[in-house]
Image 1 (spheres, rainbow, N blue to C red):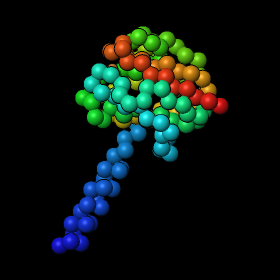
Image 2 (image 1 turned 180 degrees about the horizontal axis):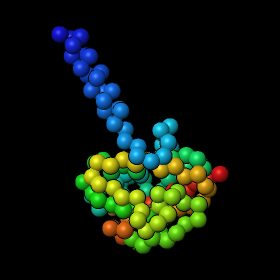
Image 3 (image 1 turned 90 degrees about the vertical axis):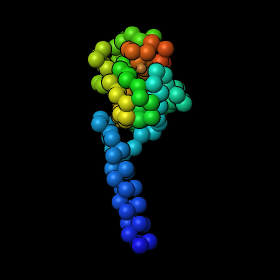
Image 4 (image 1 turned 180 degrees about the vertical axis):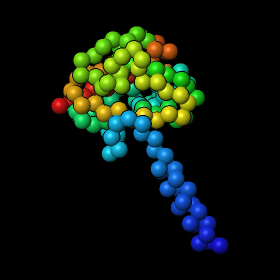
Length: 128
Ligand SMILES: [Cu+2]
C-alpha cells in the first residue's frame, strides 16, 4: 500500500511540474517573477535581470484579467528594445491561472503597466 501511495504522489508531482505553463519564452526558467493579484501586482514590482534572461509573470493565484504593455498608468507606450509580447497595445493578456515567461533580450529599463488597471506599475531593469 505504501508503495502505491508513494507512486501516486510522485506521479502527481510530475504532472504539476509539467504544467509549468510557459506559453512564450524559454524553458530554461525565469530569473525573476512578477506576481499578479485580482487588480494589482503583488510582491516585487521592481526586478533586475540580465539581457537574455526571462521574467515569469504569474497570474495563477489571482482570478484577475490583465493586459500588460510597456507604458505607465494604463497607457501603452512603445519602448525600444522591449520584448515583442509588450510591443503593441494588444499587450500580453492574462486570464486567471495564466503563467507566462517573457525573455528580455535587450538591455534597458522597461516600465510595465496594465491597460485594465492603470494603478498597476512594474519596472523591469535589464542590464547588459
Ligand atoms: Cu490588470
